[in-house]
Length: 96
Image 1 (cartoon, rainbow, N blue to C red):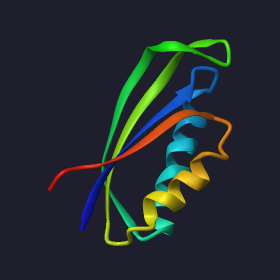
Image 2: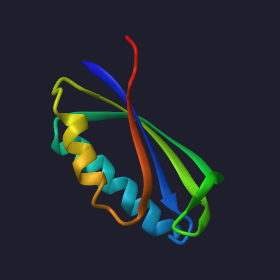
Image 3: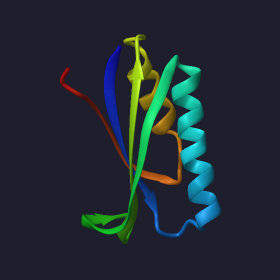
């Protein structure tokens, strides 16, 4: 199993229910592409390093997941790119 970590920054304009729905959608994408979520860490609202779409803050989430399918991160990126509520994302492979 290969281990990955996904960092997601959601817009501060989203309500708590909308943020929870967005994270559930991300978890669904991971499951759809043969991945297993091992941990979700909510880092809360933080100031961004630079302004994105005239917004200076975002909600940070870190999602650790495992998969045997090497195509899972690519498919996940393709889906995340289309989500308006996600300001930024980054998938990093963790060292074994």
